[in-house]
Length: 554
Image 1 (cartoon, one colour):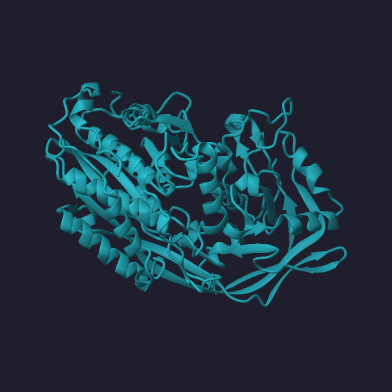
Image 2 (image 1 turned 120 degrees about the vertical axis):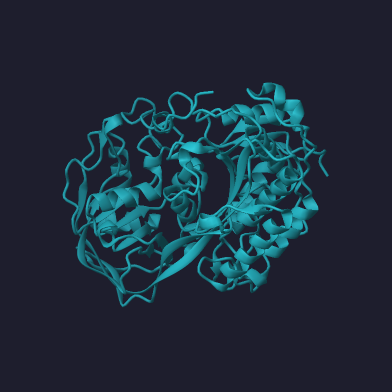
């Protein structure tokens, strides 16, 4: 086991308000293991929202928080916040093909195309909708970039490239450096592209799959199996997209060639602000797919340790409880995609932090533990909370997230997601140093991990955030160094991410996870026992939001 957490009182000299007397905090890897093995067991059926697995998960989490002596922190003094979700499931298509000048080209689901819908209709039907290539699909006035140029996309299918215009740009090209170089902006995320396609009035949106650009393979794209979720929306707020999803690289090249176009050359053209949408002449989409829509009431779980000086000021620690539920049997016959690491281990870490904090004297500020639903469906639980907060965003001091932790052993460093965003990264460096660790920036910022976890729902409302995510970069492991850290990432993301094999195993070494959980616990406890407010750094796209809220600048 790693050494216990540092005494928080020893760090209090760095705070603007004296910390309360603290007792040592330690995280027990055996407790982590027990929690993970329970939540990832078949009893919880893969923890999908709106299922029997959710009911069991909620009961388990409430019982754990009650046993620790925490108080409910949800609306009306309860443990739960209701999150109304639209759940859709595509059935076997009656028709799904592309018309081309050379004839109809069938589109095989999960092989050529992956699609879903977030409209509450029993059929997704598209008749002969023309395909229009919109490059990266970016409309960013502040960067002088508009890929649409006023093109009329109503009733058409928008076809996008993933990531930002400068993702593949070469030095000297017009896009180079326009969007943070290799660091993805929100314009590069698939969620943004679907949102923008809807704003442009498209009837469908398809993204050309590129593993390097999105950060994962086709196996991850298809892992949701035709299901989708969204927050329940008013009719006037529904997306215009009847279908949204991905084209395989092979199918994309084939369709462009059928229209007499070279996709590789168009990818280069799209890296210029002068790019204009290009219609794939003679190529259109036909779809007639039954859909089973249902409204599911899911839930966030909210627990707290009340503050005794400024209880209205909140330090939030978050993780998501949902996984992918039941799927097709894998090679070992496992049907539940139970997310032992993603994110049962994060929940286990949160519970350990709650246990340690509750054993201390009551904090100055309140500490709220948010366990979110529907993260795997688009950060929907945290998004619902952030749009309907129990505690105002302007009074939320910070959000600290745990989502996937490496299980390959102790590390000499901690990986920072979102370099240059806010002062919590300075806290990370300081606390990591007390553990004998350094900070390593995420190795592949072009994958946009900063925008892919629940903390982002808070960031875009101005709350400073910090994310611990083990797949953000190769940890410099004490045994094997960075090569061993990368090997762990490759094995996990290549085989088990969102798959049934994301399961607890006897080969798990949680010493590195303990380091990261302890680090989050220290920073959270420091903030809870101080009057300090973390700040966004100059240049962050979220600084102006926080500044408008009038939050103290100390």
